[in-house]
Length: 152
Image (cartoon, rainbow, N blue to C red):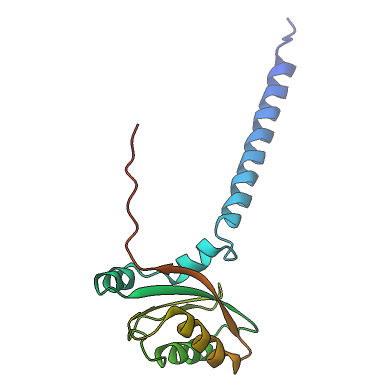
């Protein structure tokens, strides 16, 4: 006796396999787009240090995040040079500068009674100009974010 359902089952299996492959490809492509490094959130996340933020907030200091534009050379020497520039600005808290050359972002904590935000931005821009780099503001944290309560 001839089985008439066999071709239908074969077609159904092929469709399922194609759907599985397409879903797998979709997951692969979206995961590579999630953290592209170009949006503000990615730049901030690359240099965010919760310990520094918590300490700065306790001391009523501010944590500033900046993007860097220009011909960045991604190596240890460039990172050390930029770190020194950031640390040499009066009012910047010692050992708080964070740098991600890959995403082109920096962060640091500073005492707002000794250094205003506009002055910090101006000082960074002037000092980085010698390296043909410039900075632009991303975010400022002066208090801990309130956690959102989850409700059903």
